[in-house]
Length: 277
Image (cartoon, rainbow, N blue to C red; front, side, top):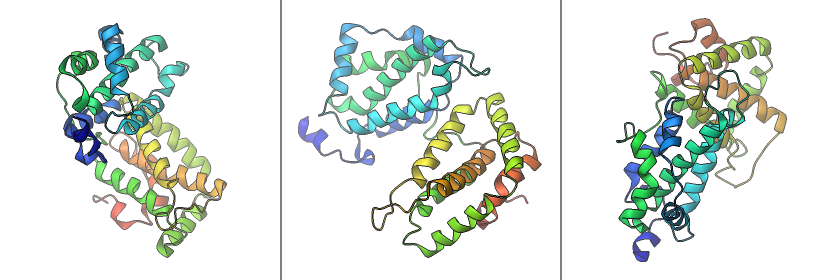
């Protein structure tokens, strides 16, 4: 068993890959009505605690990735845990308990090769009460999801601008554009977020922003360093993430608000233009 797990160095080699992807993909799509069900189904028995300890032990396959998923989960539900926003409808203590069930499912899916059948089942039980089967293999980014993904894929490219002349040209152009129409973009961003709330996509919104932020802040692939002016980076990041989130809710956001948020970025990237325009 130890020889088997020691060879798992990347997620693509994991024998439980499909289930891991299914659980991770569902995180941003957990609905408010499902949080109390997850909380009710979760029990922290001695057996569950022991199974959790084993699943998160140093010899568990890709345990650091599992812990990173825990961190991402916390970011997706930050508003829910704080419980201050008007759109939060579930009590924070209920959400906190529900997220314990979700973390157990993440841990179990990664650690399945080293867990006994009983250990694995005990950690997955609450999750499977609410989600008997995996329904998606990647997060649903809406009808313009390909454009969202293409824009997010641009972010790591921009992080290589110290060695990539084209990335530098694009980054500098984005910096220049970030100073234009700031008030209009702030208003449009607020309207886009309301569209995300009304269509139950606010956690996907958080996922998109987290993914884009990680991409832009990634060290240069050529030298491992960073070429960062914090203020410029923040401006470019905000504008690009606003564009990605506008594309996420473009089917419910007005055409004018979508244009205000996307045009400064997509006009630099022909492949990102709306095919219907």
